[in-house]
Length: 111
Length: 115
Image 1 (cartoon, one colour):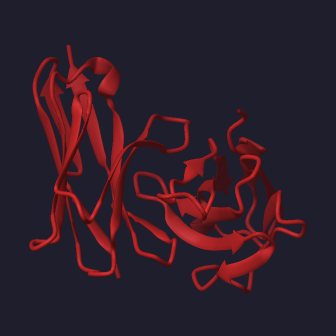
Image 2 (image 1 turned 30 degrees about the vertical axis):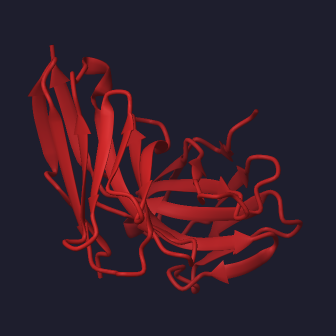
């Protein structure tokens, strides 16, 4: 059973454009939602995270939105740069400390 | 501060061979996770420890996989008789359960190919 669903599978945007990635989940006990960035040959690294008590969190060019009623979250990247080209994973965790990952979105930013 | 260290970085085996993966977590982190990441997929939890105790190993194929963390620090994941379906990257992560948010820090992984 897939706990976290992510779309799209891949995405290409032009440099300077806005990237939008989306995720949905089913388990109502999830209360912590991190986004991880992974470059080829490396492990995932935390990019930004949000708790279920919030609906928006910003960190520079990255913003994550959370909709508890619809059980959806999204990641927005403004002014996308070629260096942002990577695979992005949304994830979800409950109080049981197990982190469930989505299937990932491979982002390519073309100069 | 040193991150999560894993070795080896790569392993190539024939079916039926055994292999061990080693992980050194971030100092002071009490929780250690092993994830399996098939190519072009998200990481999937195999097992996790709090100190030396196994908390959840329900997704670990127990007939061929085993994991230990005897002193609550380093950990070893072993595959007894590898199958082609085990081809994946094996990621170790650590965290401090007492923090305000349970952020997982990942190592670079061990990329396993079973021929």
